[in-house]
Length: 551
Image 1 (cartoon, rainbow, N blue to C red):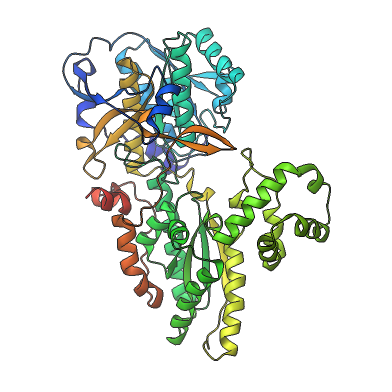
Image 2: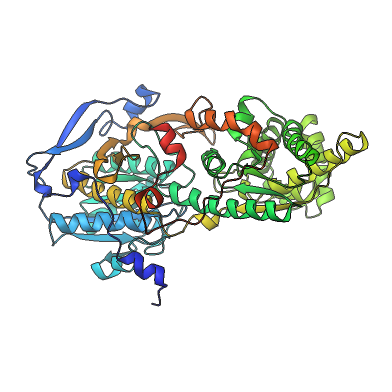
């Protein structure tokens, strides 16, 4: 396999570990805290998770650990979308297993959770993991989005575990994947299996975090990748002085990526979905906010700018949220009838009869290309696939129309020419930053320590992340501690609670204090490319939001 010069150099990088994990692992003991509850709905969750609910947080201290040292057979699964650093989680897990006992082995299940259900796996060897250390992607074993939820699927998972003789399964994924980890841990325990299940927090969206999970891995690298691209565009905009760039960024449920990129690059406008929802802002009000910046900048002869848009914004706008809900419900009930209508005009007539008057009227105002995207195939959960909706182009069209009206009134005398971008996949498989390389390796090694200590139903946690790596604090946190009950497809189900942007939090407050000035002036920041070699303040610096949340 041919490799780039950078890839070869990254193979040589040695990820840093918390100091407690660097010594003789037989001298690392567990220290337990008090029994834990859940984020909400304790009673319902205690009934659902009779065997793993209420466990204490597990920390590590110096002391004798009698359980470490026996040979183990573990399996690992990459679940959900890719995030930089996944290979290093596997590397940390592998190295921990081999350090505990050279006879220990690690199997990688292929293609995500379906690999466990179908018993498709390969053995992770030293030579194999050596080709992937400190590199991006999930291609060592592949990933998948299969949800383990039916009785048959749980039974198949347990059958694979028993047939293989697995001591543990590590699931690397986001909130849904780690919810699955908790359900598997409970099912195994209820079925009399001693197989353990440990989760690892992954998602570039940054919405899997709480008091004990300070950030999910991959977020740091992704936002630095996007911020480099945004900074490049800002430099181009300030050079050409003739384009407004509308940039959509990943983040369906939460706007953490958009907020972090705004703090790193200081664009003229950044929309935050959570604020839009709280303020009940209409699409027209959002357009008005953008136009206000365009008009003010045009008065200073600055007919250029940059607007950041979270991917999920469209679902937070009240009239759009109502329309999408009605469309989802209609397509669930009348999918066959509607799919049989191939002409868009005929689809419009059909919808006019079935939508509420408000939603039908709003639907007719949308550009045809956006309306068609709203009618596209749903995801496996029956939801509109927002990444395919070109919100950036919708806003460009509406801003252009509004500016035309203002020009007729004499309230605007500038020129408006806009370009649309979507930064998503560009950040999911980048070479992990030093921060993510270290963090992921530490998460994987911590997962091994939890397995070797006999725990199940826990997520690997590493905290104090704004300090140097040697002062990081590894731990195991009960998965049920992060859960609540939510309505999913009409039924109440246990899920790990998503972390949204907190409008009272330090990152948003700093952004809110600066954005009015950014809207008028050209104060762009140019972060540049991720740096892997050099002083720590250049190469190991964590995300701005993380530093603000954990000063």
